[in-house]
Amino acid sequence: MEEVRKDLDSFVRHESAPGGVTVEQYIALCNQLGQTPDPSKLPKTINHFPPIVQTAMRIYHKLPDLYTSLGMEGSIYSGKDYASFLSTCSIYYIHDDYDRMIVMHVCEHLEKGRLDKERAALAKAKVRKK
Image (cartoon, rainbow, N blue to C red):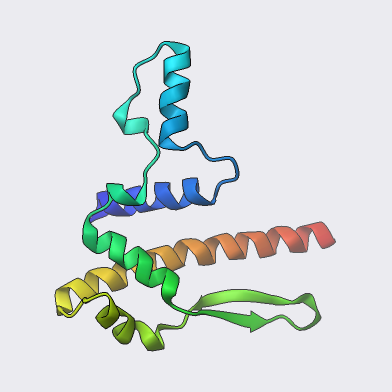
């Protein structure tokens, strides 16, 4: 599971990075440089993950976002609303308790990464205001 977490982190960082390199671009770049593509350096795609993790990522993105008001300064993302988690799992045919536990762990891991990113952006914005 630890390797999946590392791969998830890499996937999320790459997916959210502006100008991230796709697998096709990486291979084309290696060909231009006359290098053999290194499989360990290939950008991760959703197909890299086991089916249960792919489904968990889809479920995570289907769950509604929650925001906390900051008054006149706008609002900040405060996490996912898990009230519809079980029904969303059922839609994706996740009925087994063990599978739901895996899906929940993946969702929590993705959410932690997003919350960390949001907090960093908020701190950066506060520094700019000063």
